[in-house]
Image 1: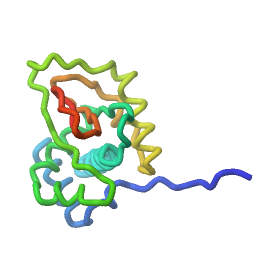
Image 2: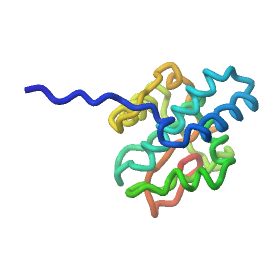
Image 3: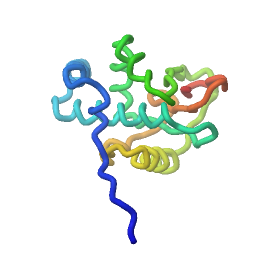
Image 4: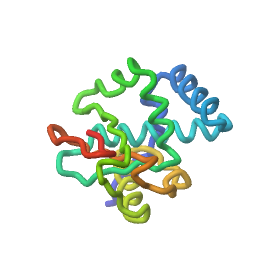
Length: 159
């Protein structure tokens, strides 16, 4: 007997459709993207955040793609909605601790950092758009999630 096939869901379903439209429209405007690309990037940021928020203690760090990271930053501008997003049972808020270059943090190469992140998002049940997860991962423009509390957040990590 084979295991049941579970269809992946779009992470956009985690927020109200009106808010998703507003969030992706803002990203499109501020980053000069077409609306379709902005929606794809926003969906992937929500998938990353939901996966990070549910990550078990001790699980490997998840790293943000530089292609997807702008949507996270845009989402954080909507502070009330951002806080509400994490008010689900068993989720912790994914805080942002930007790397300013002074913390000495280094990130693994994209070919090391990205595959476990993509696999974790898939395992959490979200659709993955692989073309958005091939981007550079580095301390200057991307973010990672350490997924745990009470660990202090080193430069670039989140929890």
